[in-house]
Amino acid sequence: MIFRSTKQLIKKKPPLVILFSSFLLVSNLLASPSLAAPVELGTVKNDMTDGDPLGSMQWPDMKAQFFEAGAKTVFDSRIKVTVPLFAEDAMNVPVSFDASAIGPVKKIVVLVDRNPIRKVLEFIPEKAKPALNFRFKLEQASPIRVAALNEANVWHVGYAFIEAAGGGCTVPGATRADGSWPQTLNKVAGKMFDANRLREDARLRVQVSHPMDTGLVAGVPAFYIEEMILQDKNKQVLARLYPFEPVSENPLFSFDFDKKPAGPISLVGRDNNGNRINAKVTQ
Image (tube, rainbow, N blue to C red; front, top):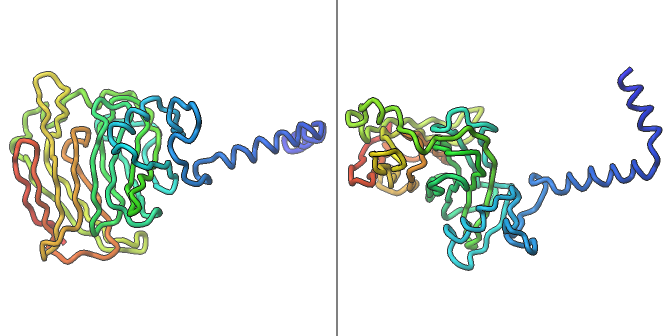
């Protein structure tokens, strides 16, 4: 009955209405980010959002703040950004990205429009794939950007939107609240996973114990890891990571490699108070 009724309704539509409906459907499909080619930012005249597909008024200010003057930037749906539709835990919002589709990448920057501290991290892949999994703090519902700089010095910007109740940047983490963080500070746990039938790449997962304080909680100054460098057994740099305050407490990162690096792999780094990180990662 349902299909017959629908069919009858369609038959009663005037031909002009049917043609107009078809035009709208095709227009929406062509406008879909998944089908669109990279779009240069600011190409829409008099656009207050500088051509942002998410319509964020913060984007023009972020572009001026985080990219060098005159930098060429394009929105590019080939950069895969995976986030939850709603952040159930605003202090631990999972995100994964992969910029492999744009070719060799020199540097990646992750930004969140409506966070009080917008810059989440910088990632220089070196020998790793231009892909990363981690968690971060989210203060309110916001767009998230993954900007990848290619060898032609063009910033390709992937994007997504996350709904949230918020508050993730302005409350203390669990180890700060219970006072246990000094006992585990900068301890490292990690493991290398071989490629398998579900994943073609070798994957390295590394977790560092650290409170990652944003400095936005009363009486608690900013205290966070500011540098992490992965090296193979010959001290060749595999990847460089520069986290900032919005990265979640006790951060866990997953790095992907086309080929398993020669181990043992070492992780060296420091936090903004000068405390050192120096550990070997289990193969």
